[in-house]
Every structure is written in C-alpha cells, then in structure tokens.
Image (cartoon, rainbow, N blue to C red):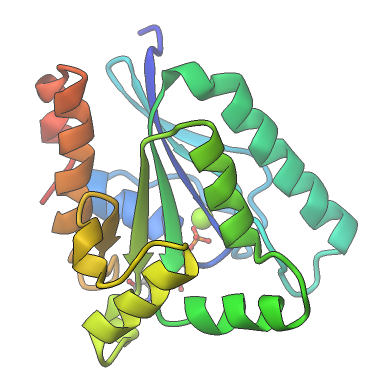
Length: 200
Ligand SMILES: Nc1nc2c(ncn2[C@@H]2O[C@H](COP(=O)(O)OP(=O)(O)O)[C@@H](O)[C@H]2O)c(=O)[nH]1
Ligand SMILES: [Mg+2]
C-alpha cells in the first residue's frame, strides 16, 4: 500500500529504539549485529502507515567521528525529505543516562546531540514525543523526569508535559504512556483504525 503517514523513532545508539518498537507493535525490526551500527532506516508497515527505526546518532565507541557525523546528516536529510508524511517523531532517550551525558557535553561547550535533534524537530514543527526509556533503572522517577525536561528547556514539573513526555520501559513492557500519545496523534488525523497496531 502507498505510504501516506509515518512515525519515526530517533535517538542515540542503544537507548532502546528497536526494543520499544518491538514492545509497541509486537514486530521485530531488523537490527544490526552490533548495537548501534544500523546505518540505514528500517521499517515496518501497517496499511499506509510506516514505522521507521532510524539509525542511532551520537558517539559510539569504535566508530570514527566522520562516520558518526555522516549518519547524523543522513538522519536529518531523511526527516527533511519525509517531513510532510511524518505524523509523529518519537525521540527516544535513556532516562538513566541522559542528564549526565547532556551535562558532560555542555561542560565542554558543545551542544548535546539530543538537544540539537530536538531543536531541529521543533523547527520543523513536528509533533514530537520524548520517550524516556529505561525508567526501570531510575530510582526517583519524578525527580529524574523533572531534570530531563529542564534539559530540553521545558519548564518542570514534567507532569506539565504529559502530552510530550512518555516515561517507558521497553524491558518491563511498560509502554502505555507512549501508546497513548501515539494513538492521540493518530486520532487527531482521523486514523483510529490504526490504534490496534500499538499495544498498551
Ligand atoms: N534496563 C533496560 N534496558 C533496556 C530497555 N530498553 C532496551 N534496553 C536494552 O538496551 C540495549 C539497547 O537496546 P536497543 O533496542 O538495541 O537500542 P537501539 O540501539 O536504540 O535500537 C539492549 O541491551 C536492550 O536490551 C529498558 O527499558 N530498560
Ligand atoms: Mg536499534
């Protein structure tokens, strides 16, 4: 069927993009043999809706900087090329490591790649969902999420952003918050018929 809508999953390598898609849809996306080395977007199709698992961006041990930059450029181009059909951009982060990584980049005077990606998606006026994954590893969840939204320049408390932030754990199968936001997005474009493809 001709693809008219798309939901993309973007995020650093190893944050759990592929695991989340598997939990949400019950379908396995092809993954590279080594974590994070998937260079090309991989897809699942439900009728005219495409689910896209984008390559991981950001530093990854053992992969040269030039290649990492090229992957990031490819992701940006992919999103720009398909902008019109993307109904939701899910930006996946590792809630247990996010703040530390962002602060480390900022201390070096660099823009953290996650923040750069978020701003890029905002500039395109995308419907963005931040999927804060690996919450099973986090002790004080509310505090952690407050710290996370602050780094995205969203005013805490995080519960003010329930339409943007979905705390999840792909590992525990706790993805209802994300399913709800994706279904909301589909409902807004009159596509309740696709609800069934996303599990609670
Ligand atoms: N503790 C924990 N580990 C997770 C979770 N989701 C994914 N992982 C693990 O994180 C690693 C990377 O997951 P993957 O889905 O391949 O990440 P991707 O590179 O973003 O697609 C794997 O070892 C997963 O088992 C989660 O919610 N909690
Ligand atoms: Mg993956």
